[in-house]
Length: 376
Ligand SMILES: *Cc1c(COP(=O)(O)O)cnc(C)c1O
Image 1 (spheres, rainbow, N blue to C red):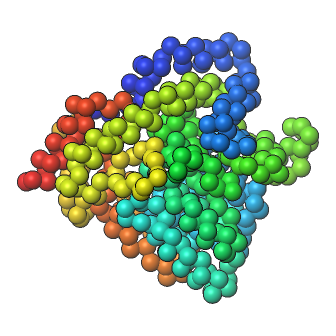
Image 2: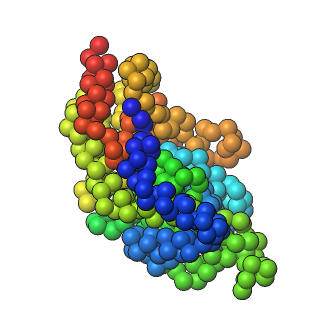
Image 3: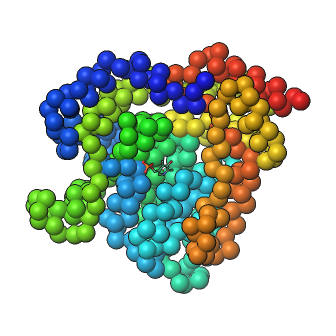
């Protein structure tokens, strides 16, 4: 059994993907080929935003947002403590200070009370200037962006939606990656929409920022590549990745998100009441980057993971360590903000095999193995 079955997906889409890749090789338009602009148009349309600018990966996409806003030393950026490293790394990278706040144990996303407490604390301390919130759509579920936007408005903060895992999710029918002042995603192969290498995208409705983002992606270009008006990056999506992604986006829209939601329903039916299954709040829709259950303690979690492995079932611990305890942030003060929920989650979560091509027999096999271990 595969944790995320990219081989199966390739077999289904092989004809179209092969054709798309061979066309790029034949045309030799490897950088900024027509497929890139086409794919950006498709993405913007799907997400429902005015501008989509692709780039080299999801981490760059976040950094580009920080650079566009001129976030710098002395600024505070609020980041959930339970996320992939990039969400906080990009803050330190531009010289600002990440302030880690706790998450909600049902949704795994930023806890709005913890967020507001942290903003107040930073204001009282008076050392740093609160500037932005990184709202991560963890495991495919959009963060509580309505509430986050209210807090942002109250304190004059910018919202960066990190939709690396959230692409395809929705709130009230509105697509993830459309909620931030700037939103980003990643096309790392294992993400909901993945390419055949690294890739990322930045989304915004703001015309002025869109121009800055386009410039940053190509060495801070002005009117052309050899006219450089700011310090930028070399961050572009390869034509071959755009070509692959266009094929995959079609399948994603037509059936993949629908099918992965069917898998989630089956897991919930078979595992509900036995373990804590993920909660999707009313009017929210997840694209299920991960299906993450919670066990009662670390011993049970680790035991279950070992038992699943014995039966050939892969599982992963996302994430084993809170951001504020990462060694890279040893020097970063966390202002006494408690992240107790995150600390508990890191000991108790386990992500099960999850993808649109998971078969009923496989879902049953996973559920049976979980039940068997827990009934011991
Ligand atoms: C994967 C991921 C990123 C980074 O994306 P890359 O394309 O790997 O650079 C950022 N944030 C979150 C939440 C992610 O899961």
